[in-house]
Image (tube, rainbow, N blue to C red):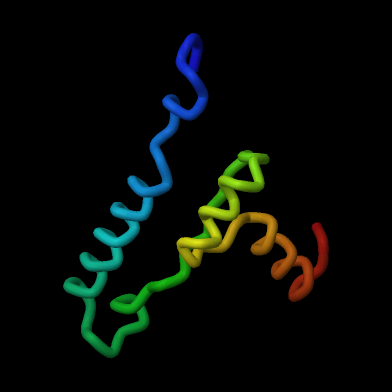
Length: 80
């Protein structure tokens, strides 16, 4: 980000939340009502962010972070 403050460099989570909602709405329109694709709710966030407050905001949105996702994969399929 050169000389820009880090918090001004990336889009806020609220912008991602708006876009996720837009995609969910588009999927609901494009697919039959009974299709699982019309009801996608799970969001997995991948990031190298280390700020626990940022991840807390991700979790407040009901989204999974890569750490939880990695742990679930490790439990189901083993570490790789």
